Amino acid sequence: MATIAQPRTPGSTGTTGAPDTTGTTGTTGTPTTPATPRTPRAAGTTPHAPHTPYSPRTTRLPALRHLGPNWYAPVMGTAIIANAGAGLPYHLPGLRAACHLLWALSAVALAVVLVARAAHWRHHRDQARTHLLDPAVAPFYGCLAMALLAVGAGTLLVGKDLIGEPAAVAVDAVLFTAGTVVGLVAAVAVPYLMVVRHEVEPAQATPVWLLPLVSPMVSAAVGPLLIPHVPAGQPREALLLACYAMFGLSLLATLLVLPLVFGRLIVAGPLPLALTPTLFLVLGPLGQSTTAVNQLADTAPQAIGAPYAGAFGAFAVVYGVPVMGFALLWLALAVAMLVRAARRGMGFAMTWWALTFPVGTCVTGASGLARHTGLSAFSWLAAALFAALVVAWLTAATHTLRGLAAGRLLPRT
Image 1 (cartoon, rainbow, N blue to C red):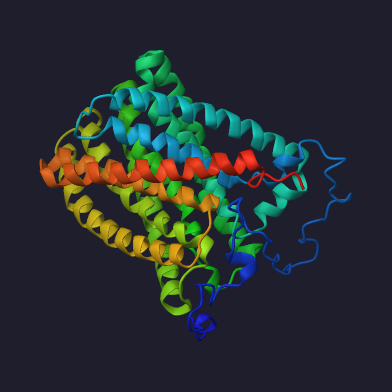
Image 2: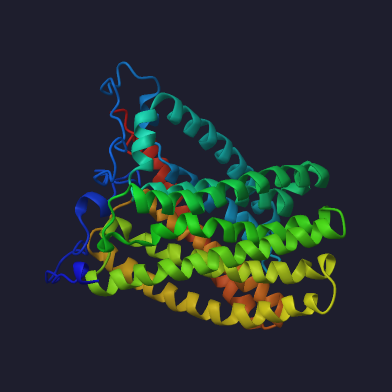
């Protein structure tokens, strides 16, 4: 850790300890200057430069050149409102209809971003490879998996009211399978690239590193929704235990990375202003793991016999309550750092979407604890966090639409 113990400049804006080229993001939410690739350990491992220089006049769809994998974050942030609203302990007038609208919006957004990202890979392959070799961008590939999973879960939770339950089950099964596969691949591939291809310094550790690791936890949280729809017996038990395995996979991986992130904050100082909202990403594995254990406890009796089914319910409370307590501690820290950054002139970036999905997982986690403990305090907590989630979504969505209309988020050059 001696490499990051650098003196902080008094009155700095939070960039001490992290190079500007890797820690600062522009309005697109991806680094304005990609990190320098690591010197190859063996001959022939250096990525090849494109044969022809990029020119917007000769390249199709130039506006998509800067469309990185972080653009799946708005899909996640929109879908989580529908999912969290559907599970709230309180039934507010018009809430279900609003959830229908937001689920439909998230489904359309997912389709649009999937098509746009496919076009990005086809027409801007050099930039896509650059994203994979940039340690500040590659972790966002975990967002693809979480977007698929969140929209799939929303289809079964609220979309079934519009398209019917059989169609909703089929859609969720496809999206859950695709999202789980992508998430497991990202959980291995991104850390592999960080080890063997990326140039990473301890001072570059940010909560973004958690993104590919938390996607299997999302699978663990939404997978139980499908358990009642698979054949009884071993298929249900296999799905239940597979979700529990992904819960453990993601939890242990998070426990490896989170100390690096917190250690970087303590030793090297605050994150750059544009990256400050990413502190809320830490809430993702905390809230999602609490959601997962509660969802697994709800469906365990349908998939596995006694005495294990009862143990799932007890573990949901024994695990979920302390983790939710830590989530609230981190939420207070993240809010304080966000206020500090705002006072120092933090402008809008796509990182603002980090204020949505992670907070939404805490809503679903608190709702699950309210079901299993019967405490009104958890119901109040879920309602308060849901209100904050809606405000954060409105803020991020408004600025994103303005940025798109003005051409700032997806410039043509």
